[in-house]
Image (tube, rainbow, N blue to C red):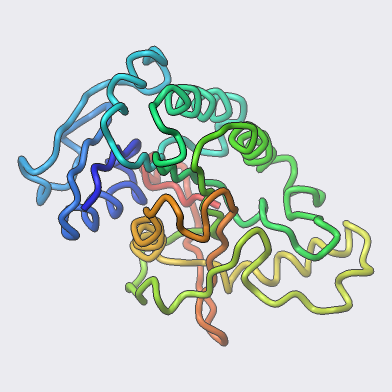
Length: 257
């Protein structure tokens, strides 16, 4: 059983992290702007701190994080650009102040575009069009890899509300795409590699609950995924589908790529 501090616990992914953590017997602390949006089933089994992460002092966050075994950050949205980068930096800076950082596990969130496509080290975020939206993931990755934290960066494709498969059925990868990339793609220049990368995305569309379960299954400080980017894909032969996002979708439920 671990003492877990969750940021973004009222969102689509964070809500699943919260529910699974409680069901697994972990001690949970949630930092949220609106406690009323927490799952009703959470009841009084969690410690709740109310606040706006974007305006919280780093020292305040650090004091709240102290005493926990793990931090799971589900807050922020890549579409917010520089604000997302600043939010990420605020969390990392607070986490850096904890005692014994090697034993303090930190899960952060990025997207499949941050995974290496092939042995050359090219990534989806290097490709035309992808770069324009997902550049904050690169900035955040560069920020966290400079730390002494025991970090791990979850890099799924789009996450959706879908039936749970179970974390053990997913294909997991470290630093590389979990889906098989055609051999011919290695010789393609970036503009022609883009459609190949896009064709692999349906294999990496996973359920929020499965993504949450993966993070909670890898909380050991010495786990093999420590200080790696972690990719997720459906079982061989399966493809997922992504609902179309609209302006009326609630902010906390916008699909995260």
